Image (cartoon, rainbow, N blue to C red):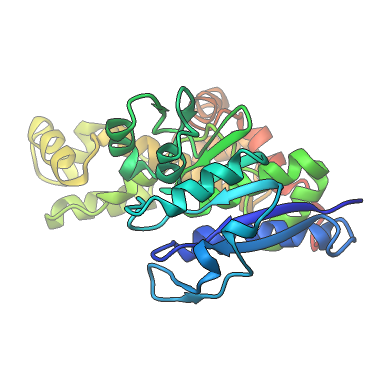
Length: 324
C-alpha cells in the first residue's frame, strides 16, 4: 500500500495544537493498520524551510521548504495569528500546492488563508466560532456556516477550532481506511469517534459561562448539579430571589444566552457524558438529565448532534476496550 502524502503548512504564529492534533491522528493510522509508515507520510513545510515560532512560543522545525513540495494527497493549513499573509508568499505557496492536491484541509483560522488563496470562493466553509463573522465579512463569496465543527465542500474541508481538527482528521482517516481504523485511533487518543461534522460548536455557550453576580452563579451551579430538577424560569428565579422577568433578563445579559437555552445545553452535555461513561439505559439517562421521556432526549440529540442517543453511544463505544 502506497502511503498518502500529507503536507502540513507551518508559519510564524501558527497554533501548535492545530498542527499536532491532526498529525497525531495521521501518525496513528500506521499503528492502527499495522503498517507503520504505509498509511500516511506526513511532512511539515514552511516558506523557505525556515524554523517558525508558534503563537504560544513553541519553536517548530519544518521538514521542508514549501516551494520544494511536489504533488500532495492532503494539504493541511492550520490556524494561527495573524491569519493573513501581508507579503503574499505563504498564500501563493498554498494556492500552488492546492492545485496539485487531492484534498485541501484547514483547521480553525487556517480558513482565512484558504479564502485569501481563492480556494473557498463559492464554497461552504466554517472556522472557529469567534471568527465566523469576520470570515464572512472579509470574503463575501464564501458561504460561512458558524455551527458545524467541520464542513466538506468538494475536495476542500474546513474545521472549527483546535480539537475540531482532530475530528476532521479522523473523518479523513475513516474515508481512506475505514471506520474500524479511525475508531482505534480515536480510542487511543481518548476522543469521541467521531463527532458528526454538523454537530454544533459548543463554544458559544462556554465563552460567557460564568455570571458576574453571586446569586446567578449559584443558579448555574445548581443547574449543573441537578439537571433532573425543575429548571423552569420560574423555579430558577425563585432560587435567585428575583422575579421571573428580572431573572431572565439578568441571566441572559450576564451569561450570554437565555436560561432555557443554557439549561438545554447543560442537559445535553450531562446526557452525553452518561452515554459515553456508563451503561445506564437510555430511559434512565433521559430521566436523570431532566428530559422526562426518551423521545424528548432523542429530539434534543438529533437537533443538536444529528444523531439519536443510541447512535451517539455506538460511535463512542463500539471499539473493543484497549484497542490501539
